[in-house]
Image (tube, rainbow, N blue to C red; front, side):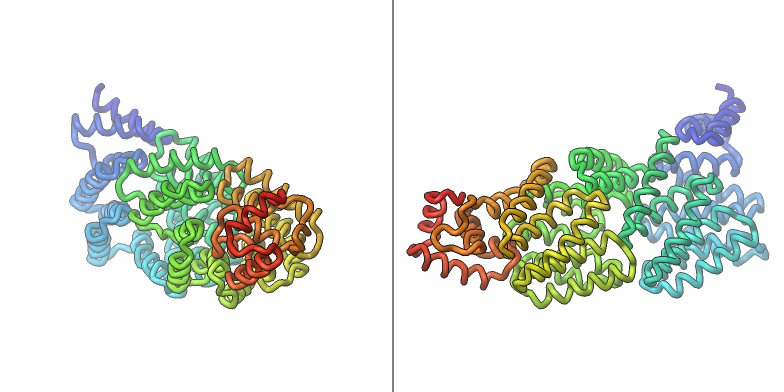
Length: 545
């Protein structure tokens, strides 16, 4: 192909977001005759958007030098900025930081008053934000937006508003922060923002919505990201993260098989590019689904892969240890995760697992305190999801405190919230506890109804651990007064017959191990037996299991 024709076709492909064609045509033109800096800049963009980060870095480096040699300082600085940013995203911090420093020095040595000054403030603002100083970050992002407004740069305007929203969310002002994020997204969805900043903003906004448990917002923007990616079949950098978010939404709505397939695609996609920041997120999501299905070995391997890629493995890993019966390990891991959480948002993500694990280990006071903290955080954020999580935690602690009536009230409200969120698994887990509360209140018919409803969901989802626990718990026949046992003693006996340890029984029934031991003493005395084996035989002989 004629080089001039290839160049024209490459520019045209870029304009219609046909990234691979643009890369191939511009590369062909460059091989024939080295491209001028402006077209090298276009080639770098196309290379980055099809996942060829190494080529993008080389091309942007050439563009930077070309602009600098031609005296176009501002454009040289812009190339240096994007080059530094993608290197930082790939984990090449020394090299990326070096390019940002070079761009800053080039601008400092120039008398120019240009929008690039705002771009070079972005790394400093992000450093403050990630370093736990949202106030400093907010001040820097305000300056960035002022520069962007002065020069009318829509990319920098949107990036600045994104940063302001993130800083407000981290500072605890979720309402104003989310409003600012929505404003940034409006600019993206109306096509005012170029592709690389648009992809950054899409992913960052969805993560911020997830952090404050605003699931409806996260779903809305994930759907928008999915459409944006679908319009650009060649797009690579943001597709993996989009697949992860889609998997999370599918999981919430009870489409576990689809969620596993989607996150499988995500793992394959992100593994093809080294340093992809979405890789750890993808493997963690896969691990969560495998844990819930009872595939513990595969789940553990996925958690380790997530950790190797820099993603936190908590609270999932601690909950896996709990499911494996390693309660002491689970307690140590979840306590450390809660202590290390450096802000309210990060801490709230581990607290639900904290309550469950502390109750299993018999630390009722810690569980109750954390359940109260969760309720306070939910009230601050105004999140229906977090309110439902807090309700489940509170109901669990009320059951341990032998307040089934109070537990029923709290759990019924949480169940309705889960139903409103179309979250069948979480609703089913809540119904399992509701069944316990009803059974302990002397209402076996309602208890059976709750357990039957929960069981149907667990079977459909393939939630093997929950199903096994529920079947052992609800396995007693209609004559629950056999042998003079109370309802709760029958529950304990059924779990003993299912081979559960005292610690596992305590977890299933949401009681302390001390309570389980006391029930066992009463059961042995009433049945006239002296061992778990004899009690198990009695349960089978009398149709309790």
